[in-house]
Length: 322
Image (cartoon, rainbow, N blue to C red):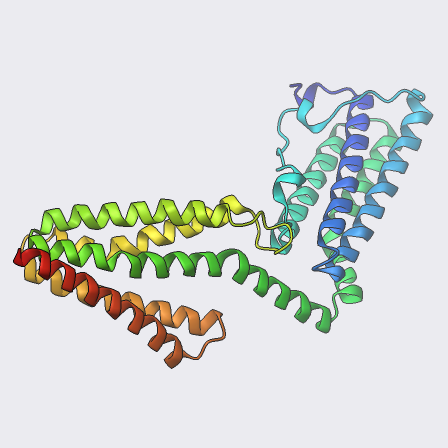
Protein backbone atom coordinates (compact mmCIF):
# COMPACT_ATOMS: atom_id res chain seq x y z
CA UNK A 1 0.00 0.00 0.00
CA UNK A 2 1.05 3.57 -0.64
CA UNK A 3 1.48 6.14 2.10
CA UNK A 4 -0.94 9.07 2.03
CA UNK A 5 2.01 11.50 2.23
CA UNK A 6 3.40 10.08 -1.04
CA UNK A 7 0.24 10.74 -3.07
CA UNK A 8 0.39 13.39 -5.78
CA UNK A 9 -2.44 15.96 -5.98
CA UNK A 10 -4.10 14.16 -8.88
CA UNK A 11 -3.91 10.90 -6.93
CA UNK A 12 -5.47 12.54 -3.86
CA UNK A 13 -8.33 13.77 -6.01
CA UNK A 14 -8.72 10.36 -7.66
CA UNK A 15 -8.86 8.75 -4.21
CA UNK A 16 -11.49 11.28 -3.11
CA UNK A 17 -13.61 10.39 -6.15
CA UNK A 18 -13.31 6.70 -5.31
CA UNK A 19 -14.29 7.33 -1.67
CA UNK A 20 -17.36 9.40 -2.54
CA UNK A 21 -18.50 6.78 -5.06
CA UNK A 22 -18.02 3.99 -2.52
CA UNK A 23 -19.86 5.90 0.21
CA UNK A 24 -22.74 6.72 -2.09
CA UNK A 25 -23.14 3.04 -2.91
CA UNK A 26 -22.83 2.05 0.76
CA UNK A 27 -25.58 4.47 1.78
CA UNK A 28 -27.70 3.21 -1.10
CA UNK A 29 -27.24 -0.35 0.20
CA UNK A 30 -28.15 0.80 3.70
CA UNK A 31 -31.32 2.39 2.37
CA UNK A 32 -32.27 -0.74 0.45
CA UNK A 33 -31.54 -3.04 3.38
CA UNK A 34 -33.54 -0.92 5.84
CA UNK A 35 -36.46 -0.11 3.55
CA UNK A 36 -38.83 -2.88 4.67
CA UNK A 37 -38.30 -2.63 8.43
CA UNK A 38 -37.12 0.98 8.88
CA UNK A 39 -38.53 3.09 6.01
CA UNK A 40 -37.89 6.43 7.72
CA UNK A 41 -34.20 5.70 8.30
CA UNK A 42 -33.96 4.30 4.76
CA UNK A 43 -35.10 7.70 3.47
CA UNK A 44 -32.33 9.39 5.47
CA UNK A 45 -29.69 7.18 3.85
CA UNK A 46 -31.19 7.70 0.39
CA UNK A 47 -30.65 11.43 0.74
CA UNK A 48 -27.16 10.95 2.14
CA UNK A 49 -26.34 8.77 -0.89
CA UNK A 50 -27.56 11.54 -3.19
CA UNK A 51 -25.31 14.05 -1.43
CA UNK A 52 -22.28 11.76 -1.78
CA UNK A 53 -22.99 11.43 -5.51
CA UNK A 54 -23.13 15.23 -5.79
CA UNK A 55 -19.72 15.46 -4.09
CA UNK A 56 -18.37 12.90 -6.56
CA UNK A 57 -19.56 15.05 -9.48
CA UNK A 58 -17.81 18.13 -8.05
CA UNK A 59 -14.58 16.20 -7.73
CA UNK A 60 -14.77 14.75 -11.25
CA UNK A 61 -15.44 18.21 -12.74
CA UNK A 62 -12.33 19.62 -11.07
CA UNK A 63 -10.22 16.60 -12.01
CA UNK A 64 -11.16 16.73 -15.69
CA UNK A 65 -10.49 20.48 -15.84
CA UNK A 66 -6.98 20.03 -14.45
CA UNK A 67 -5.79 16.61 -15.61
CA UNK A 68 -8.08 15.39 -18.37
CA UNK A 69 -10.54 12.54 -18.75
CA UNK A 70 -8.51 9.62 -17.38
CA UNK A 71 -8.96 9.17 -13.65
CA UNK A 72 -6.51 6.66 -12.11
CA UNK A 73 -8.10 3.91 -10.02
CA UNK A 74 -6.99 4.47 -6.44
CA UNK A 75 -9.08 2.97 -3.63
CA UNK A 76 -9.00 3.03 0.15
CA UNK A 77 -7.35 -0.41 0.26
CA UNK A 78 -4.46 0.97 -1.80
CA UNK A 79 -3.51 3.61 0.80
CA UNK A 80 -2.31 3.07 4.37
CA UNK A 81 -4.38 4.34 7.28
CA UNK A 82 -7.94 3.72 6.15
CA UNK A 83 -10.40 1.63 8.13
CA UNK A 84 -11.36 -1.58 6.37
CA UNK A 85 -15.13 -1.60 6.77
CA UNK A 86 -17.01 -4.88 7.02
CA UNK A 87 -18.59 -5.79 3.65
CA UNK A 88 -22.29 -4.99 3.37
CA UNK A 89 -23.21 -8.57 2.48
CA UNK A 90 -21.67 -9.77 5.76
CA UNK A 91 -23.82 -7.36 7.79
CA UNK A 92 -27.20 -8.62 6.62
CA UNK A 93 -29.77 -8.54 7.98
CA UNK A 94 -28.92 -4.88 8.67
CA UNK A 95 -29.29 -3.70 12.25
CA UNK A 96 -30.31 -0.06 12.60
CA UNK A 97 -27.83 0.93 15.32
CA UNK A 98 -24.96 -0.88 13.66
CA UNK A 99 -25.64 0.87 10.35
CA UNK A 100 -25.81 4.28 12.00
CA UNK A 101 -22.55 3.65 13.88
CA UNK A 102 -20.73 2.61 10.71
CA UNK A 103 -22.12 5.63 8.83
CA UNK A 104 -20.76 7.91 11.58
CA UNK A 105 -17.35 6.21 11.35
CA UNK A 106 -17.32 6.70 7.56
CA UNK A 107 -18.17 10.40 7.86
CA UNK A 108 -15.49 10.99 10.53
CA UNK A 109 -12.83 9.19 8.52
CA UNK A 110 -13.74 11.09 5.34
CA UNK A 111 -13.64 14.43 7.13
CA UNK A 112 -10.16 13.61 8.46
CA UNK A 113 -9.07 12.69 4.94
CA UNK A 114 -10.28 15.98 3.44
CA UNK A 115 -8.72 18.07 6.22
CA UNK A 116 -5.34 16.36 5.79
CA UNK A 117 -5.55 16.66 2.01
CA UNK A 118 -6.43 20.37 2.27
CA UNK A 119 -3.37 20.99 4.47
CA UNK A 120 -1.13 19.60 1.72
CA UNK A 121 -2.88 21.20 -1.25
CA UNK A 122 -1.19 24.21 -2.88
CA UNK A 123 -3.57 24.63 -5.82
CA UNK A 124 -6.23 27.23 -4.93
CA UNK A 125 -9.14 25.46 -6.69
CA UNK A 126 -8.24 22.09 -5.18
CA UNK A 127 -7.78 23.58 -1.71
CA UNK A 128 -11.14 25.34 -1.90
CA UNK A 129 -12.99 22.18 -2.98
CA UNK A 130 -11.33 20.04 -0.35
CA UNK A 131 -12.20 22.63 2.30
CA UNK A 132 -15.83 22.71 1.13
CA UNK A 133 -16.02 18.91 1.27
CA UNK A 134 -14.45 18.81 4.75
CA UNK A 135 -17.08 21.32 5.90
CA UNK A 136 -19.81 19.24 4.29
CA UNK A 137 -18.63 16.14 6.14
CA UNK A 138 -18.60 18.09 9.41
CA UNK A 139 -22.18 19.12 8.74
CA UNK A 140 -23.37 15.58 8.06
CA UNK A 141 -24.28 15.16 11.71
CA UNK A 142 -26.54 18.20 11.54
CA UNK A 143 -27.76 16.97 8.16
CA UNK A 144 -28.76 13.67 9.74
CA UNK A 145 -30.54 15.61 12.47
CA UNK A 146 -32.39 17.72 9.92
CA UNK A 147 -33.31 14.66 7.91
CA UNK A 148 -34.43 13.02 11.14
CA UNK A 149 -36.74 15.94 11.84
CA UNK A 150 -38.20 15.52 8.36
CA UNK A 151 -38.45 11.74 8.10
CA UNK A 152 -38.02 10.35 11.61
CA UNK A 153 -41.19 11.71 13.15
CA UNK A 154 -42.21 10.56 16.63
CA UNK A 155 -44.56 7.99 15.13
CA UNK A 156 -41.81 6.73 12.81
CA UNK A 157 -39.33 6.55 15.70
CA UNK A 158 -41.80 4.62 17.83
CA UNK A 159 -42.51 2.23 14.97
CA UNK A 160 -38.82 1.63 14.30
CA UNK A 161 -38.14 1.14 18.01
CA UNK A 162 -40.88 -1.50 18.13
CA UNK A 163 -39.41 -3.24 15.07
CA UNK A 164 -35.98 -3.25 16.75
CA UNK A 165 -37.48 -4.73 19.89
CA UNK A 166 -39.13 -7.52 17.92
CA UNK A 167 -35.90 -8.23 16.04
CA UNK A 168 -33.99 -8.39 19.35
CA UNK A 169 -36.54 -10.85 20.68
CA UNK A 170 -36.36 -13.03 17.58
CA UNK A 171 -32.59 -13.02 17.19
CA UNK A 172 -31.28 -12.94 20.77
CA UNK A 173 -33.89 -13.45 23.49
CA UNK A 174 -35.79 -16.39 21.99
CA UNK A 175 -32.76 -18.55 21.07
CA UNK A 176 -31.06 -17.63 24.36
CA UNK A 177 -34.16 -18.43 26.41
CA UNK A 178 -34.71 -21.72 24.58
CA UNK A 179 -31.12 -22.72 25.34
CA UNK A 180 -31.28 -21.65 28.98
CA UNK A 181 -34.52 -23.56 29.54
CA UNK A 182 -33.20 -26.70 27.88
CA UNK A 183 -29.86 -26.57 29.69
CA UNK A 184 -31.42 -25.89 33.08
CA UNK A 185 -34.17 -28.51 32.82
CA UNK A 186 -32.86 -31.31 30.60
CA UNK A 187 -29.65 -31.77 32.61
CA UNK A 188 -31.46 -32.11 35.94
CA UNK A 189 -32.36 -35.78 35.46
CA UNK A 190 -28.88 -37.10 34.52
CA UNK A 191 -27.16 -34.87 37.11
CA UNK A 192 -29.27 -35.84 40.10
CA UNK A 193 -29.61 -39.44 38.95
CA UNK A 194 -25.83 -39.69 38.99
CA UNK A 195 -25.68 -37.84 42.31
CA UNK A 196 -28.08 -40.14 44.17
CA UNK A 197 -26.84 -43.28 42.44
CA UNK A 198 -23.17 -42.74 43.28
CA UNK A 199 -23.16 -40.13 46.07
CA UNK A 200 -19.76 -39.24 44.64
CA UNK A 201 -19.43 -35.51 43.98
CA UNK A 202 -16.59 -35.75 41.44
CA UNK A 203 -18.34 -38.38 39.32
CA UNK A 204 -21.55 -36.34 39.52
CA UNK A 205 -19.64 -33.25 38.40
CA UNK A 206 -18.27 -35.11 35.37
CA UNK A 207 -21.74 -36.37 34.42
CA UNK A 208 -23.20 -32.86 34.77
CA UNK A 209 -20.47 -31.29 32.64
CA UNK A 210 -20.83 -33.97 29.97
CA UNK A 211 -24.62 -33.51 29.91
CA UNK A 212 -24.31 -29.70 29.76
CA UNK A 213 -21.74 -29.61 26.97
CA UNK A 214 -23.51 -32.34 25.01
CA UNK A 215 -26.85 -30.55 25.31
CA UNK A 216 -25.22 -27.27 24.27
CA UNK A 217 -23.72 -28.78 21.13
CA UNK A 218 -26.97 -30.53 20.26
CA UNK A 219 -29.15 -27.44 20.80
CA UNK A 220 -26.69 -25.20 18.98
CA UNK A 221 -26.76 -27.36 15.88
CA UNK A 222 -30.52 -27.79 16.05
CA UNK A 223 -31.10 -24.03 16.24
CA UNK A 224 -28.52 -23.21 13.58
CA UNK A 225 -30.03 -25.70 11.14
CA UNK A 226 -33.67 -24.88 11.90
CA UNK A 227 -33.94 -22.07 9.30
CA UNK A 228 -31.69 -19.57 7.53
CA UNK A 229 -33.60 -16.56 8.86
CA UNK A 230 -34.39 -15.23 5.40
CA UNK A 231 -38.15 -15.58 5.73
CA UNK A 232 -38.57 -15.53 9.50
CA UNK A 233 -36.34 -12.51 10.16
CA UNK A 234 -34.55 -14.45 12.91
CA UNK A 235 -31.09 -13.40 11.75
CA UNK A 236 -27.98 -15.43 10.97
CA UNK A 237 -28.32 -19.12 11.86
CA UNK A 238 -24.68 -19.25 13.04
CA UNK A 239 -25.25 -16.47 15.58
CA UNK A 240 -28.51 -18.02 16.79
CA UNK A 241 -26.83 -21.41 17.10
CA UNK A 242 -23.95 -19.97 19.14
CA UNK A 243 -26.36 -18.11 21.45
CA UNK A 244 -28.54 -21.17 21.98
CA UNK A 245 -25.62 -23.55 22.46
CA UNK A 246 -23.83 -21.26 24.90
CA UNK A 247 -26.93 -20.61 27.00
CA UNK A 248 -27.79 -24.33 27.04
CA UNK A 249 -24.35 -25.17 28.33
CA UNK A 250 -24.46 -22.42 30.96
CA UNK A 251 -27.90 -23.56 32.10
CA UNK A 252 -26.49 -26.97 32.93
CA UNK A 253 -23.12 -25.83 34.25
CA UNK A 254 -24.55 -23.54 36.95
CA UNK A 255 -26.10 -26.36 38.99
CA UNK A 256 -23.21 -28.72 38.19
CA UNK A 257 -20.51 -26.52 39.73
CA UNK A 258 -21.62 -27.14 43.36
CA UNK A 259 -20.48 -30.75 42.96
CA UNK A 260 -16.90 -29.52 43.06
CA UNK A 261 -17.56 -29.47 46.83
CA UNK A 262 -16.40 -32.71 48.39
CA UNK A 263 -19.29 -33.14 50.85
CA UNK A 264 -22.21 -34.78 49.00
CA UNK A 265 -25.14 -33.32 50.94
CA UNK A 266 -23.66 -29.81 51.04
CA UNK A 267 -23.10 -29.91 47.29
CA UNK A 268 -26.59 -31.30 46.66
CA UNK A 269 -28.35 -28.67 48.81
CA UNK A 270 -26.46 -25.86 47.03
CA UNK A 271 -27.21 -27.42 43.64
CA UNK A 272 -30.93 -27.58 44.45
CA UNK A 273 -30.88 -23.92 45.54
CA UNK A 274 -29.13 -22.97 42.29
CA UNK A 275 -31.78 -24.87 40.30
CA UNK A 276 -34.58 -22.94 42.00
CA UNK A 277 -32.84 -19.64 41.26
CA UNK A 278 -32.35 -20.67 37.61
CA UNK A 279 -36.02 -21.58 37.21
CA UNK A 280 -37.15 -18.28 38.70
CA UNK A 281 -34.76 -16.36 36.40
CA UNK A 282 -36.19 -18.18 33.39
CA UNK A 283 -39.71 -17.35 34.56
CA UNK A 284 -38.74 -13.68 34.91
CA UNK A 285 -37.21 -13.56 31.41
CA UNK A 286 -40.36 -15.12 29.94
CA UNK A 287 -42.47 -12.60 31.82
CA UNK A 288 -40.25 -9.66 30.85
CA UNK A 289 -39.76 -10.36 27.16
CA UNK A 290 -42.34 -12.91 26.04
CA UNK A 291 -45.53 -11.20 27.24
CA UNK A 292 -46.29 -14.01 29.69
CA UNK A 293 -47.67 -13.27 33.15
CA UNK A 294 -45.02 -13.98 35.78
CA UNK A 295 -47.10 -16.39 37.88
CA UNK A 296 -48.05 -18.39 34.82
CA UNK A 297 -44.45 -18.46 33.56
CA UNK A 298 -43.22 -19.45 37.02
CA UNK A 299 -45.79 -22.23 37.30
CA UNK A 300 -44.95 -23.67 33.87
CA UNK A 301 -41.16 -23.52 34.32
CA UNK A 302 -40.90 -24.48 37.99
CA UNK A 303 -43.39 -27.35 37.79
CA UNK A 304 -41.69 -28.73 34.69
CA UNK A 305 -38.27 -28.45 36.28
CA UNK A 306 -39.40 -30.09 39.51
CA UNK A 307 -40.89 -33.02 37.58
CA UNK A 308 -37.58 -33.60 35.79
CA UNK A 309 -35.68 -33.16 39.05
CA UNK A 310 -37.93 -35.71 40.80
CA UNK A 311 -37.45 -38.16 37.94
CA UNK A 312 -33.67 -37.87 38.25
CA UNK A 313 -33.74 -38.35 42.03
CA UNK A 314 -36.05 -41.35 41.73
CA UNK A 315 -33.92 -43.01 39.07
CA UNK A 316 -30.73 -42.31 41.00
CA UNK A 317 -32.15 -43.60 44.28
CA UNK A 318 -33.39 -46.76 42.57
CA UNK A 319 -30.01 -47.29 40.94
CA UNK A 320 -28.17 -46.66 44.20
CA UNK A 321 -30.32 -49.20 46.03
CA UNK A 322 -29.16 -51.86 43.59
